[in-house]
Length: 119
Image 1: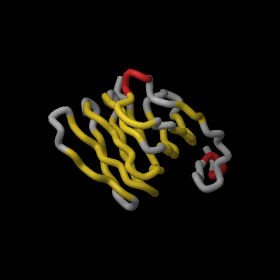
Image 2: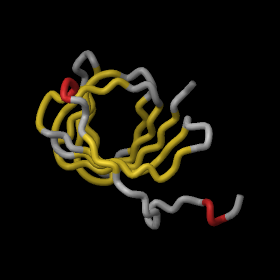
Image 3: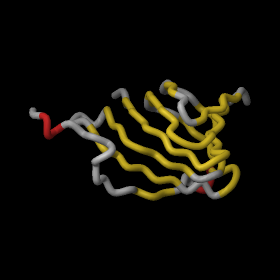
Image 4: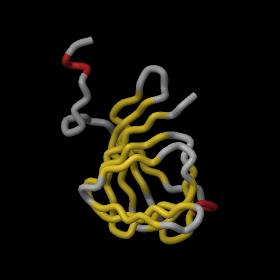
């Protein structure tokens, strides 16, 4: 292991993967998304990168633990009971595995994500 194996997000040339949530999950808008997964661990349980989402709302069900840092935009997370949390540029938080609800992008959103997927 050497210094050249450190992943610098600002210099990573990772290609973006563009996608949309499955149609049955979309509740509002056309939430096109992209991800640049800059790093995945050899065991496949840990990954990190940059996610971007367009305005829209869709259902989510987390099997992974996710640390998020919002770089730009505004989103609203709602749990299955309808409780809401608005997140915006500068916010940092963890979504624990087992969270179910919705993610709604109000203003185009960009975030750093760090995911751990338990076996």
